[in-house]
Amino acid sequence: MRQLRRPLAAILFARLLINAQFRIVYPFLPIIARGLGLPLETASLLVGVRSAAGMTSPFYGWLSDRIGRRGVMLGGLLALAGGAFLLAQPATAFRPGLVIALAAFVLLGLSKAAFDPAMQAYVSDAVRYERRGRALGIMELTWAGAWLLGVPLAGLLIARFGWQSPFAVLAALGVAGSALIWRLRPAPLAAAAPASGGRFPQLPRDAPGWRNRSTVAMLAVSVLVVTANENLFMVYGAWFESQFGLPVATLGLASIVIAVAELAAAATSAGIVDRVGKRRALLVGLALNALAYLLLPRLAGALGVTLAALVIVALTSEFAIVSALPLVSELAPESRGTVMALNAALMSAGVMIVSVIAPRLWSSGGLALTTAVSAGMVVGAAVLLWLGRSRSE
Image 1 (cartoon, rainbow, N blue to C red):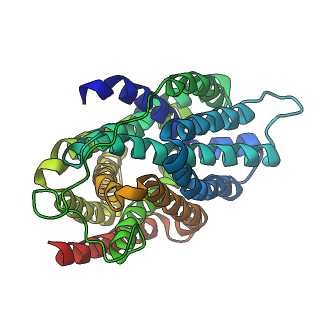
Image 2: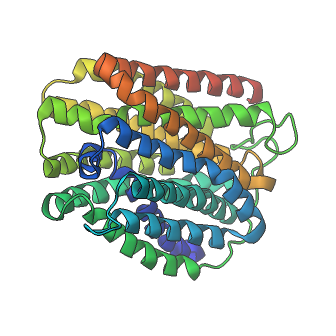
């Protein structure tokens, strides 16, 4: 992987920006809603629209299979810069109202829809399956990094310069990231997983390409884990505001512990899944994640204990999400970009649905109902994974 260090560094920086625009919205959604003059429920629908835009990712995956990964990643970064620019406008004729905000969130959704599958396919093309868990795990460090760096910095910027200031910074950095991606060279195709035997067997294929039961089941596992996580973190800001009354800057800084947990989870996944077995590691992660959701309402109380419980949820969830990626990457190597994009689109669909459901679950049943629904999703994912395992091993 030595020859990939510079390309991977450029991709890491670009992916950090893509993920930052997603992560900074959740804890500050009440503040953003007030800045736009919208109720929280309407602002949460903007997040759903952003996720709906992500459902276009199969098109970009198909495009990356045909024109190359670099051009699609570049388009994603330009969409990020454009969407952030719209939200960053000062009090002028273009000040973000509902229509401008809607257009901005669509562009932000398209940025991730285009960039992520092309990036994952680029890395999977370049790295052998035996080491792909590590490579994709390193890429996923940016998800935690976006929280660790982006959320506290966004909180400080909002507290001093207003809610639009983080988007101005993202717009400028998006242009810089585009220049780095423009210089990437195509990745050489690495060998696929062994057809049978060995330490890393492929999932069984009972139909050509990605249109088979095993692929559908594995994609469902991935989507359920992400949707369960979003169901809780969609109302994370409202929960901490109502229970602890944290000011905006403190709310951002409190998120550091969650980011550290996710960073540790991604690093752990990168370090062990190739050694212990990708599906085995994922199954353990799912079991622990479901248990963490169920325990969270019972542990929530004082701020320190609540943060510790939330850390466990974030750690187990991120570990499961990252551990699923190498399995998804090898479902159909001949259409890798399309499959990775389909995975992203289904995740976006799940987040879009939960953006409507999560605030209502929170309003009607509070934390207990929210975490019970998330735990049920993860248990369903574990059942699907276990059934797939029993057929293939």
